[in-house]
Length: 345
Ligand code: R5P
Image (cartoon, rainbow, N blue to C red):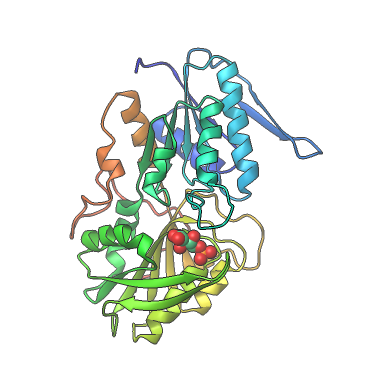
């Protein structure tokens, strides 16, 4: 790709991460005014020329998912109509990624529909992080770079884990991710089988592996209601695991009640990335000492630099590569951006 001048724009979903990426790159954020009309419609106006420029839009489609998605589509349409040369969406959390198949009834494959919408408005490239199912990349005809936070998160917990650690996949879908953590941390693996009763309720039915008198690290891509983690922690404690259960999850949506649900179930610490903006709802429990946020700014900035230089993203896409004893990720150290020092277990 011919190198054009770069414009980095932020939607309203995670301006903090967008600013950190801009800082890493040493560029200012582009001027983009986004307003919401009284009827709920969104208006976006790029307040500087992007003609012939490479435009990157940072916007996780996190809750409120539909608002953030439509905002991304509107910014992309504005950039295309303003003659941007190339438009890339940096989507640290990809909403609707879990709606990737039909499970029997007459339902939509919404992840595919969202991919179609993004291409329709003129996106040329998508950069995302730990997609719920990596094969959802196949819903796009344009390039999708699905980066991984596993090296960052395993780097963040490495000093907190001991030789009795066991890595837990909370369901069959997370076995590959859990294997990568286990390899990175030099720990064995155990797998839970869960049955989803509803959007908010899961039940653990089986445990494969030995957790008795061991410390458990549950890994997942998303924490939404916290139900999966809470059920998993409770099942592990019932099976004789030690009480200090810790969690690594790429996307900490942490909907209302999630923190309390996990804490009550015996979770001691949660490490999540900043793919989703911190909860600003003034809720009774904002995660406080439980949640430690790991920055992905360097990861995205590095990806962007390599893309612009036609370089390889392979090591940013691969969960393996930081074996036992390795520190941080392949491209740099892990930065924990919360105020709370990581709790040592
Ligand atoms: C499901 O397959 C995902 O990997 C997560 O386990 C799930 O989305 C977490 O949701 P919740 O926190 O609501 O249980």
